[in-house]
Each structure stands twice: as structure tokens, then as C-alpha cells.
Length: 208
Image (tube, rainbow, N blue to C red; front, top):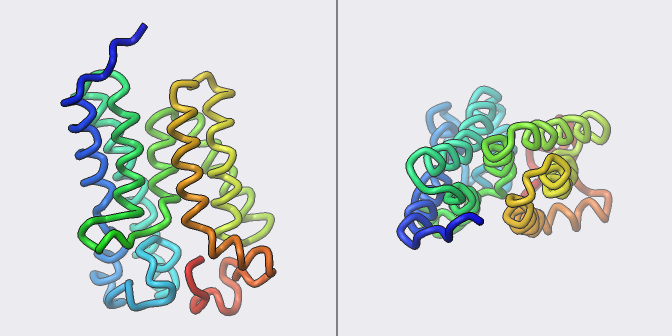
């Protein structure tokens, strides 16, 4: 039986994950690319999808990669420097930091890229399945939010199937959070109003 995680380790992992997760790469790359304040563009969201609405594809790609990398880095650092299972707290906090960053009055992104980043770090096979599911769904339906919802919803099942059962519960908690953050997208999907990737209106549609 694994020994209980010491309180100091739990707190350290939470702080590490939150601080890394709260880095607003979308805002940083949008400014560097000359797009201006991302919070005043499109949906106001700080994620890669909204950066793409600015027309700055390089900035959007950099945001996607860095939002995923910060989640993975939180997990790797917790594994290297802290006792076993601390990575779970770091993973949870990284997504929470992205969604609710203190620097932005707790108004952040929706956590999809960071979720995939921690999934890859916790179990790279499960993470690849999550990413592949997003890509496949995007190729079929060409709707970013729908692809994310499908991939995120299946993530706990992938971890369970691959034997990482200790990570199933935290992944389920995070999946519920990310899906909740997409509640407005879900409403538009039900109405058939969610914009398609690269389709007319995708740049100006809100909160996809």
C-alpha cells in the first residue's frame, strides 16, 4: 500500500501546478504577434481557439503547444521532486490554474490543451488516444468544441483501459470541469449554431 502523501508535498504540488497552469500564453503570444489584447477579441477566451480568430496561426500554434506543455511540466516536476502521487495534485492544479488564473481575475481558458498535456505526462498512451480522438472528431465534424468534448469525455475510460486506474478519478473530475466550461458551446451545438473550423463566422463566434 502506498503511504499517504505528506501535507507539504500536496501543497507544493498544488502550488506548482497552479502557478504553471495560470501562465496566460494566449495573451502573451497574441500581444507578441501584434494582435493586441486577446481578452478584447472574439470570445475573450485566452485559449488557442480564440488566438486563431486573430488570424495569427503561428501564435495560435504556440499557444496550443505551450498550454499543453505547462500541464505536462507540472506533472513531470512533481514526479521528479516530490513523493509518489504528488503528480495528481499538480495535474489537477494545472488545469484549475489555466481555467481560473488569479492574475486575470479567475477568468481563463477552458483547459483543453492543458488537459491533454497532463494526460500525456501521466500516461503517454492515454494522452495520445485523447489527442487522436480530438483529431479524428475534428476531421469528421470540423467543430473544435465538439471534438474537445468527445476527447475529454473519453479520457477517463482510456486511463482505465490502459491500467492507470489511480488516475481515473482525477481525470474524471477534470473532464467534468472542462465539459462544464463548455456549457455555452453545448447549448450552441444543440441549436446547430456552433461554428465549424475554418468556416464562415468562426472568427467572430463567441466562446467556442
